[in-house]
Amino acid sequence: MNESAVTPLHAPVRVTPKNASQQQMLKALRNSQITVILAPAGTGKTFLTMHVAGEKLVKHQVDKLILTRPAVGMGRTIGLLKGDLREKFTPFLAPLIEAFTIQYGKVPYEKALASGAIEMLPLEYVRGRNISGICILDEAQNTTEDEMYALLTRVTEQGKLIILGDTSQTDMGKANGLSWLFEFIKRHQLYDIISIVRATSDDIVRGSACKRIVQAREYDHQ
Image 1: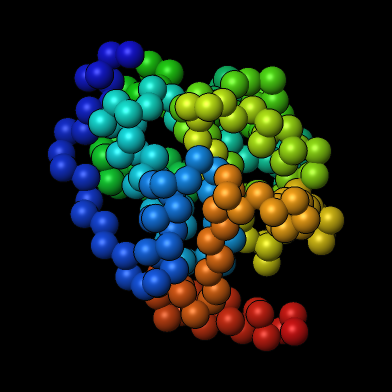
Image 2: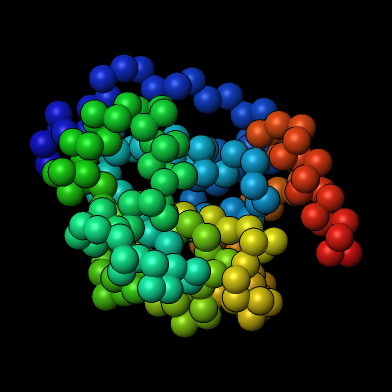
């Protein structure tokens, strides 16, 4: 890999955890091969994930960063967007991309994308691939059981999988891949190979408006 392709042009943003849940996220992201973060919007899960994954990429500790999410909710929309697969899928991975560029710069992101060090794929395209770098699955609450199982089985000895989800924003109902995963881990006691970090609306750091809106929504669904 061409190391200049992912070398940041400036020092990355210094990240200091703001609460106990963020400390747990950082610990799991840095030390676990498979990490599952279940947290509502505004808790910092995307930013911290891209901090750790981006750091490993720019330090050349991994040579591939795969960004993916299920195509639920896209329907025919993705086919109407202009461009190739990457250009069509970019808008749906915007939160991950933004978190990377804020911390490591737009130019390093574009160079990494051009060199293949960063790859964006719909979830169905990951099936059959070997994950030997880092794969980040966003919007995991919109996967099916089969999709989640298929992704888990792609991780090689050197690979790292990060699963991000928020069950309050599912389009799949209660029978989704993320809920299945938690039950699967508990049933087979897989906690030694899969780390789970849970955050609540009390851990929201985005702002007071976000926190109040999320908690109001939770109240409506009690």
